[in-house]
Amino acid sequence: MTPERVVDLRSRTILRLLLIVLVVAVTLEVLWLARHILAWVVLALFLALALDPLVRWIERRGRVGRGPAIAIAYLIVLVVIAAVGATFVPKLIDEVNGFVQALPNYVHDLTHGRGRLGFLERKYHVVEKVREQVKAGGAKKVLGLSGAAVSVTKSIITIIAATVTIVFLTFFMLLEGRSWVERVYSLFPEQSQARWRRVGNDIYKTVGGYVTGNILISLIAGGSITVVLLVMGVPYAVALGLLVAFLDLIPLAGATVAGVVVAIVAFLHSVPAGIVAVLFVIVYQQLENHFLQPVIYGRTVQLSPLVVLISVLIGAELAGILGALAAIPVAGTLQVIVRDQLAARRPLAPVEPLPPPPG
Image 1 (cartoon, rainbow, N blue to C red):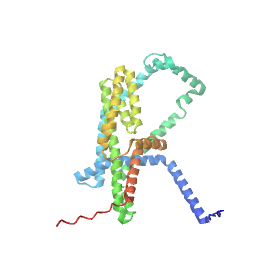
Image 2 (cartoon, rainbow, N blue to C red):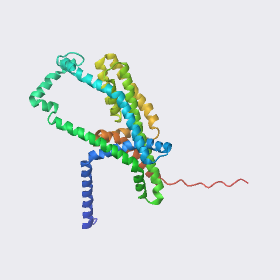
Image 3 (cartoon, rainbow, N blue to C red):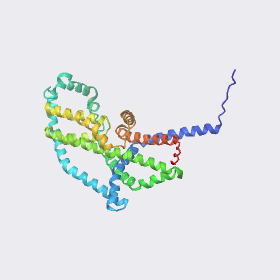
Image 4 (tube, rainbow, N blue to C red):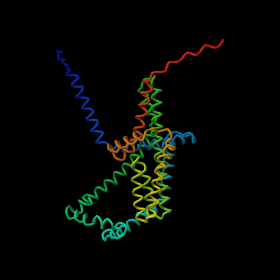
């Protein structure tokens, strides 16, 4: 009969374990409470990585300091945004106004079972169902109008605060990012700093390449669909193009959702326009997946489709759209670190002695 083993835990060990659990719990609670601020920080980090190549180019070409180069980069971005706004915003406002003016006609056709949306009333009796919900819970329950003005006001204030904060965070990340990275490298032993600098450079290339590549691909998607819709005479082409450019930033699902929205609006305009829109969306997605992404991303983000899908699903579950956006850079960063660890543990191949010279 084997003797029983008695494990004696010291009180100091138990207290240390409880302290670790408490610290982890408090840290997770603080991160959860500050999740919106952390989202701003992550977005500012992505913008800083996207602008850093431009800032470095200005430093080299203009032979100016880091601060003036950042100011010039901000000015260039502001000019580009103003030019795009002057080109598209008036058209966008006209299209939104046109949609608002056309909305009563859509509602009238829907309630009377006529027009392209009339099938919703004829087959599914949508109007009657809405009226039943209004009688059961009132307009507030159906439309969520309770405190709508307060919610809209809070949202506008939050958006303004977030925009200003992200702009300043991006500026300081561009200005002080190098010094902070050097401080992190200095924490490692001197003999391993070269290795971690190499890892940091690979992470920078991975994340920066993904961010700039994703923005470029989204602009191509939005611009191309706008041209197609304008050629087919579909209304709200510019607004739909902006929507496609924004949704295409979201990996995997974004382009599909944008394609569905574009197809619906195109079919409401005319059947030929809807068919052309669907065919273009299908062809473009194949072109983007098999040509644009490999060419633009290059060798910066080398992840298998399975890893991309799992990363996006986990990121979306944890932090919504922002989590889906950050999923691939985070996965690429982890891949760089894992590869470095595996390479460090791999034993060096023995060096074979050189053969003796002839003669």
